[in-house]
Image (cartoon, rainbow, N blue to C red; front, side, top):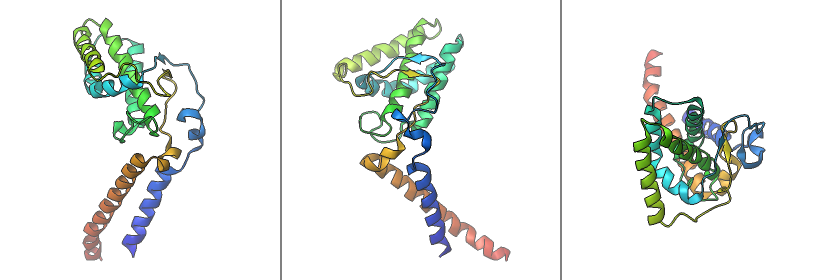
Length: 209
């Protein structure tokens, strides 16, 4: 009975955390409160570019993180790219990049637009220019090979700003099958781990009595 109550409480807490709509998420596009644009502007990224940049994001961020001769704007955009990536659950949600209807698609636009901006900035940095040009050439080749240059979506013309964090549209999750299935599976895994941990700790509690 205690185990059942524990699982119920954990499941309820998980649902509350992921599916309840916070007040700030009622804003258009799931933007953070205030909509301040005191930060740095980040140019938009097309839907086609996203599909390719996402494949190279790891290389881009790794190169940028090792850069030595940087400036403040570069570091701020890199930091924004990392923050947005975590807000978008580290790109782990199915369809977040390719599915325009995904509740995570706009926040994926944000972190990939920032990654693209970081990559283009490194072309002007002596220590990273060669490696950055190699990545850019590979991205361009993939864009042509996969015929993605002209593919757009409703967020393709949307620019971003480092002062404006884009959050997932949590209120849309229950209506997006792939996202709902993924988070439900995560909740089930969490409940299973909690149950296993409870069974593991129970003998110790009894022996201590």
